[in-house]
Image (tube, rainbow, N blue to C red; front, side, top):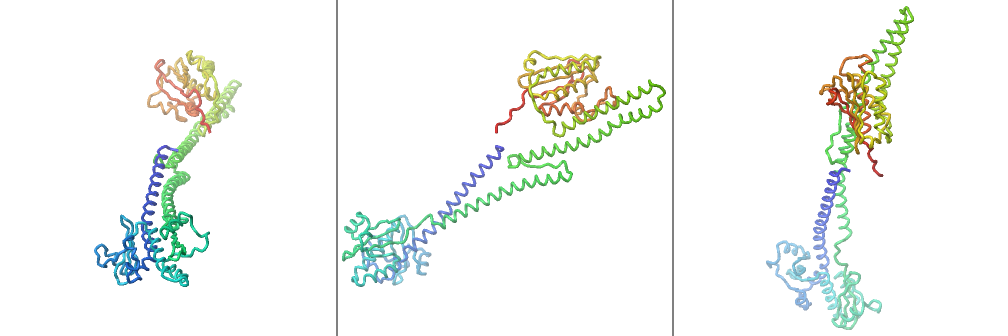
Length: 522
């Protein structure tokens, strides 16, 4: 995976995660702010409606003003905003949050505004509701108490029951506060409960609804939906970009299938398909080169085959006119030479085709490069006795002679260079071999006319020749150097040409790694 793509993807994921978290926090705070306002007003509504139904609640519940700031506020009081006055006019319960807690407002019996302060709304509303119940339960007799409990439970939206068995009693600490203060507030499974002792000693337990829950399931569901939607949207854009890049590859593949061999995929670096695009373009270039090579080969082969075939046809016709055995043998020798030329040409074409169309399955084994060089020099000296073919190998190279090569093809490459030099040399060919820890190098130099610098690259092109000769002695077929370059390519090396400083002619050089690359461990 490209590092740029990984860093870009990581930054996007980190940014997306931060965005989702920030969005969830904003939604959580905003929604719970509204929910909290609504819950507090709904929770305090039964008590405030009860107080508003009394003509004089400040006198009937005289303990409210000092403990809970209960007071009657004039409807035109400047502390009441227009929104609050409007809501009170509609008969709504208003909860206003302040630095000291909440204040609850309701329109009273005579149209005035009643205000109750609660520093801890859940606890204070529970206690005030229980105290109001005790006032009314103490004012009725035992025979009317059950009816009063039902009436108060319905009006104040609280569950009220008389404690009639020891199993329903809370722990001793709560009972001690009840006997000392007359009531005790405590939590049971996070639900507010108030235990009251009436004037006749009877215990009454008041249970209020559950407190406000920040993590209610609708909030969690909403956050999950929002997070999932943001992630789905981000995934959509990522997949859309990936799909767009894949469509580019698909489009180019279709164009190549239609014959547009020059079509290529354009993809910026660091994208998820950049490596695919690079591999696809490499494949397309290879296919285009193979098609071009095939086209050139068909054209060149058809041209190269005409000459020996024409000579064979001419030789066959001349046999009919031969008057003596000597003339007949001469024609037969010529035909045999032409057939040998055809055989050599076909061998060259097949070798070049194998190397161009993916190459042979090379099995690089350890072999002595210096021995291969000496073998080629010996063989070529026998073939060309008129020339002086000399091999130069220093002592350091002899010690590092073992290298990872395909001996048969390295032999073929050096042989082609020496044979090519022998065709153009005036009298001497020099073969130098130098090997170090990392690379092998073979230089083949001759004292011939050399090669113009502007033709150095052209000589490695298939069927390319720098003269118009077609004779078997000097012309060749224009495939030898192409085969050399492909052999070196499959050895991860290079073949190039320059000028010989010592002999003045051409110098062909082969350079390749001494050891094959280590395969990565899986």
